[in-house]
Image (cartoon, rainbow, N blue to C red):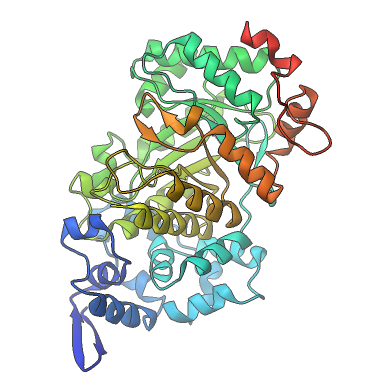
Length: 458
């Protein structure tokens, strides 16, 4: 079905829903690379005008990726909850924006709505929202998950301790873990990207983290971010797997390019659940996403990258994950060219995922060849913290020496805690105080290595 809008006497025509969505998207380099971006600011405004007048029901009637050809589309549409959708079923995209911004639309109302939304609805409304709109609505939403601690409670802010090492050296990993724990990082997960994606190496790192966790009774969870099949093999060999990780995307073909499908994810989830390692909950999956991943493998079906990104959240929520995060600037300037595009994309990703009911975090990051710097990351970090972001990364010095990109440091998380007063997960906060890492009076990190962690340093 074609769509039209008239702006200043010029009629703009959009061949179908995916073209309308793409032209309405705030400009980014990836959509220009794909040839789907608006040709001018005027065309973008015309598309946003037409999109604002579009009934939400249209996204249930017209799939941007064909139902017959794509398992992700089938997962999304087959899982749609009409009863949850009913309160907004009569609205247009523009009317939905107004409804989201009303004071009466609170956190419980948004939580009840989430099963009734398909990802394309979230993507569509985000395209006509200002940054402050994305922040205000996301801040209303509380998504709580549990494994060994409780993640996502309102007024809390978590971190993934990311002690990557360029040779997977155990001593180097342990030193970075000590650094992070001494600064109060690691309540979301202690998660390591291995250099070597082998079963033996993954099992070795998992045992290292688990030994430290058990020795110091740390209420957190571990993960080695290898391919899901490698993790499953390590699990079968007896490795202590807490969370099962996988990068995911918003089309069946893009997931196939990652070497996965929905059935494999379900198998991995079942195997991890069967271990019963969580003591306060059973959310065992950890997913990462990122705008541009489908375009990079030519599996985007002519859609804009932000719409496909939102569809990845439709995959994630089917598996009730403990954690999800967008590695927003990691894929490179071909997809998000500069700090402005990265900031906008990070806010969109967080908003869409939270609206769909996910415990969304963000790797506030950029590659060294992007037109961005740490000031841009400070701005995005601060905006996301105020928007209720679930967690960010904690990387030594904000410089990942293995993956060779710039992220956020342990001290960046301390800055957010000082600015907002948001402590980590309650069980982890209690542990930090018990170990002397945090002062009981003001929750600030200790100036010296706490006595409770001195043995780890040896």
